[in-house]
Length: 425
Image 1 (tube, one colour):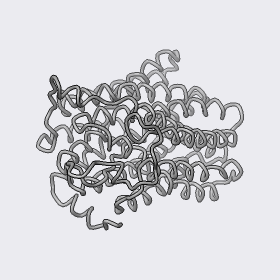
Image 2: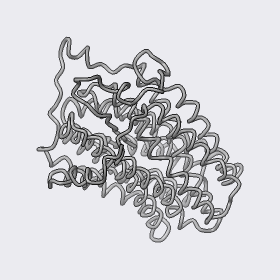
Image 3: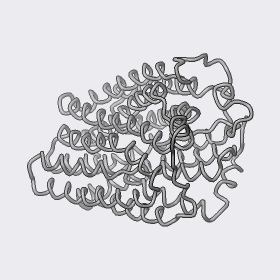
Image 4: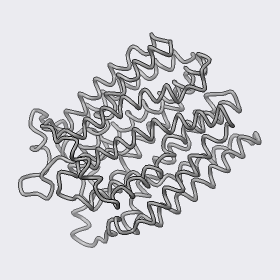
């Protein structure tokens, strides 16, 4: 049943809502510029995609490990101090990373700077979604609000790569990475300053603390599935850069990535207008299968124009799959552990991105861009297997997916009458 595009107008109808979602957009723009910025900086300077993939992997894996910690801190002490502290750590570390690469310092120093860069990500997307959750708790418009954030994520992954590629290739190799840091700092400060829309801090004691524990039987399988999805994202980014370089159009690598993100953006907008009746697990598994199938032709079409067309089609499967993957977690996570739970799923996603970038960087150094595309296809198959292992409720692996989403979601009389999606990438 379609909810209609009018829901978006309702969600964005107040100045306060527009202000914090805009600040959140800027705060997470580095999400799409950091990995690509590091790859461009290191590969242009050193000539090695393997080295670039390793440095990128350290940054992203550190982000993965830090995400749940930042999430727990945000739930306990509030968003503002964490956002500001993380943004400062990020920018100082980016400066150090640029310096070590430009000065041809030992790789170990570059990896230390990459560690600090990854540590500086504070899940700004989760902070914005927590504000929406506080604003529309129990309201069907919350589904639209989260879908809106998924659309902004896709815009981030369209604007960021194009901007990072242009700055690094047309102006200077350092500018793609440095610009992302400055924009992210501005967004973090703007978001932290908007205290009125920030959810109250959570205090727990005794029985309530026990009741709000996160169930590892739910989080571990979905986090591993997100890791598989992340491997695909991270691998694709490195492969596209190598593909563009091999074709003699390195300056257009961000544009090629834009086609993939553009297809996902369109699918994300449409997804936000629909009230789903299929279970999130079923949607995730179907999405994973179609995503894997959409990747299969890429190794056999080594030309920019048809590759761009195939990436648009593949992108149409990305947002629905990502949204469905986090919907499984959302329906089972206590409301007062939202940011931390998003941190754990983000940990899986970011960890997979790092592993995918490092692994396919090595593959590309050995076999070129075509071998890298074969690696992306393998990552798609891993995603399908991981999706089949996702649980739909605590202690019940692979529950019957033939029932409606309402049967898998909140029970009658609960505070959340409609299925809610919390996409975060």
